Image (tube, rainbow, N blue to C red):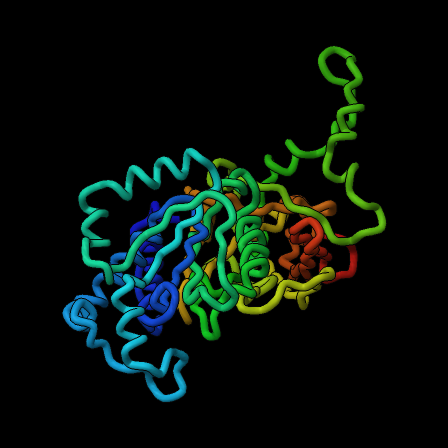
Length: 383
């Protein structure tokens, strides 16, 4: 997600705002300011570190902390009542900590190389009160209610090659596992995500992914390969279907729904707030109506989903949203669900200019972390 300058700028502003909301208390562990970065790589951790270091300089606390004259806590704030004890705790070198978790040894080695660069070393400084960066692989030892800010890029290497929302469902599970470590009012970056959908015309893609129904290569029967088709392994009694990941910019397609003309107007299948607890059972979302455009002369053969992430209140970013008529090159993969009853240009409903619409609803299953969609034409038959 950091490949695009606009998305990187939004992420940076959100991280800076989250770190500036931290309440620093030098008499507590980590000075009351512990930032946890779950991203693949330490980029957001360095943004947080620079923000903490800059806040120290701007607030003028450098000299006061070095001399041990930091003000006493506000009324009702946790901390020792003894001024001498608070001074001793400040002199012990407790300072804000940015903890960057790496998944693999290779990621940890790269993060260490970045951390030893001169530009990165200047962020921590040599004074005992300066914020510090800890790089760790595996599970950290955290205290309950100790994390003041939880950061993550909207990208995960473990979900590479999957639909773009897979990494966000995984992040929700990570937040749920760490929820007991979050302090009251802890900042989450990102805060939430939503999944949008539109209808597209992609006749070539639809034909390529259909089961083989005849003899090929001079009369050879290869129909047994149809057992690998997604519809063959799907639960026959379940109306909710899975999607497959696809870089639509590499496939000939045209957006065929009215909402698809703009990512801001597209219909929302679901909205997930990371501050809420993950459900223990399957969660169904309200249905939405995807209206076909009047100029959808090429028919409708698929439903497409993509995601938008809220990095700060009211600030949404996306790396796979469409333009006015199609999807452009993007780092994330869209989710595609092909129609079982598609419309092609020769269909009577397309020629007659009838009002066409698809009613779609989503269901998230926490057992496998998969989001499935049930869709049907407004006339009542299956999409």
